[in-house]
Amino acid sequence: MNIESWLESLTAIVLDERLLLIAVAVALAGFLRGFIGFGAALVSIPVISLVFGPQLALPIVTIMGIPSVLQLLPDAVRHSELPIVIPVSFAIFLGTPIGTLVLVSVDPDVMKIVISLLVILMVGFLALGWKLNQKVPSSILFLSGFSGGLIQGAAGIGGPPVVAIALSRAGSPDRQRGNVLAVMTAIALSSVLPLYYYGLITMQAIAIGLVLFPIYSIFTWIGSRYFDIDGRHHYRGAALLVLGVIGISTLLAACWQFAGKL
Image 1 (cartoon, one colour):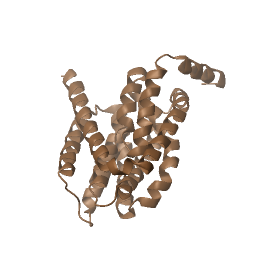
Image 2: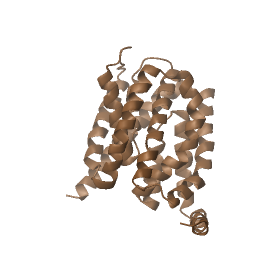
Image 3: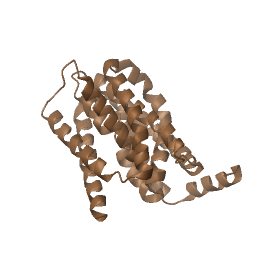
Image 4: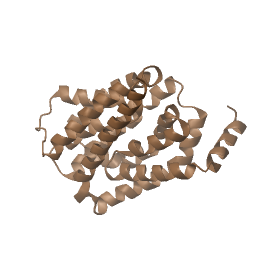
């Protein structure tokens, strides 16, 4: 696509009346990203998929979310636990390319159903006050990261498995949020190369991502400021609520789509 065609595509996107609906979803997604560190894909991907389709939605969300990685990186570095973050992130980068292969070649609904059930189960344990010991088994860290990478590559919502592990750690809201921000940074970055390799990062996706990223970044900042001012007192409850909603909604959507193919 030449520059003239690219500008025409960008203009058409800006003038599209459906952009308002997407902008509202992206604003809410940005607030969630800034406040609790995850949940943005739950809001943005379904709405963008309705307008542009699922294979375009994932690269759009990836592109518009890259600046927020830099916005939130200082908090992630300052408060996260490296013994948790490093092995989980390594597993994420292993799992995401496989998940992207699923996106372009295999029906991912069954995998989403299984992971959603695991997320709902984990939320139940966390809501009852379950926490991991100081020494987390490496197998659990690897499994959570690899599962997150798989679902991120296949559906763009890879946060729940890794966020569940981060929330299971004892500590202050700042420490828990720092762990969430760190593993979500790995989730965000792990998508870029696989999407590019499989040809999903198109000029149209870049154009739409560029239109949306200022909205996303502004509301990410607002969410982050809310955490600093008063949100840390509500952080764990809000994070568990969003995590539960993600698990249930993903499960219902995947079951509906799977049943429709029978």
